Length: 267
Image 1 (cartoon, rainbow, N blue to C red):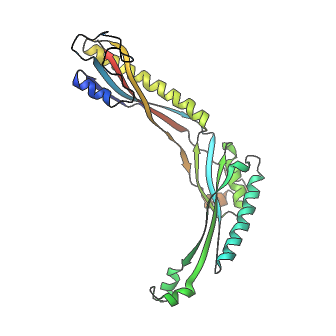
Image 2: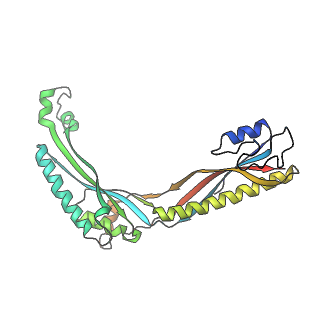
Image 3: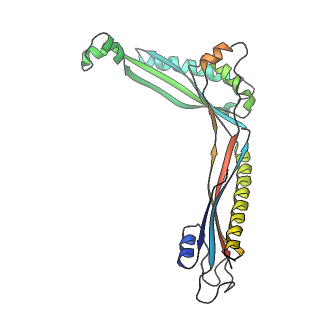
């Protein structure tokens, strides 16, 4: 996928194009990237072409992040807390027994014990919702303890899900497939190279159309871009159907894009 935008400038227009770019070169003689008087007639600003372009690359994910956790409810907040802690610790121990996971891969990302009132039960029993005394009978406590799990062996994600389910997890959240930092950096470099090549090609085409030629790059801005992870929602009903075979997941590729803005000088 490529996106392009062209802006041809001279005098005031050129100055405006350059002013919006990080580290843009000045038109003063001796400024960095602008040789004294080279290609600029006396009293005239340089003619420029400003091009915006984007490049995109894809790769198989090499990192997965998912959330799992346990829940408990009861009339006593301390009992709820203790039950959540006990079940959460059992879940964590089971996950750490898997060869794909280490201590740093399973971390708490949420713990909560909260007071609740069963409004639906009150409505069903015909109890007024604004009666504080009647509320007491329908008051309970809900506790949760969630873990964030990072799996750098993408093929093992299904096994990790099965371990969590077997260990009593009440929730398997969305599974996000993404890229490790090193792979992400490599793909971003490729995307930038693609975008720069496209920007240069576009600038040369436009320059020829107006009987000019590109002589040098005035400024490059590569601050734009994004990584587009792939997400999957764990389907418990499908997992029950395929219980004997375990959970089998097949993520799509992850895309990395880069945006560039390049100002070329022409003569």
